[in-house]
Image (tube, rainbow, N blue to C red; front, side, top):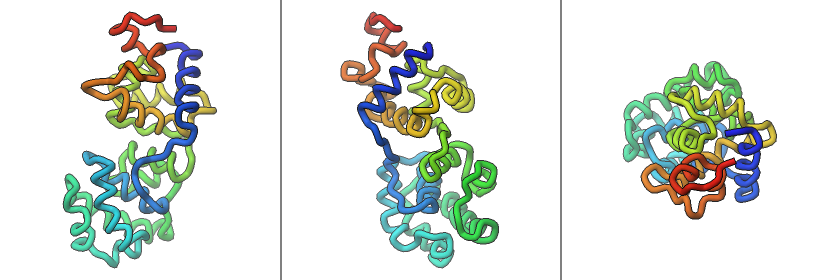
Amino acid sequence: MNKNTIHEMFTRFQKQNPHPVTELVYTNPYTLLIAVLLSAQATDKGVNKATAGLFAAADTPQKMLSLGLDGVYTHIKTIGLCNTKGKNIITLSQLLIDNHEGQVPDSREALEALPGVGRKTANVVLNVAFGQPTMAVDTHIFRVSNRTGLAPGKTPRAVEDLLLERISPEFAEHAHHWLILHGRYTCKAQTPTCQGCVIRDLCDYAHIHFNLTNP
């Protein structure tokens, strides 16, 4: 996919949704970090249901420690891998207090040093909480990038690097959310809704399956 096509793609995404936001409910960088950590192998809807009570009780590292592991587990027990995630939340909260004055750090290195926080989680926090132009490649972005021809790659990291290389700075802050939402609601895994797709004429998949002219 050439540079002009990619620019047109994101121009359309921007026109369709000028200010995209995460569907995870959070109130501050700390609750965002916890929500993203919990979202691994879970739906945003399921996480939001669990965190409604959790964040009402504990929206800071100190409050989370006061709630304790049993208290955390009570709220997140419906989420996959809840035992491991609960332990990570408690340990992470203590480390934020010990090493970062109770604040979520705005560097990748510091975030990835926290238990349960990998590159994808760090990228989401850096982008959403701190406005950094990162690209958190989840299953949706991986699929959209490969299917459309935007940034083909065999691994999430390969796709991430190519996206960062190809997407112009003017779209970098929101590109992550546009691609996730496009993958979640339009370019779905089993039944993509190509008929109503805003980038249908730009997409490699549509070009192959519907004999469209692809720039």
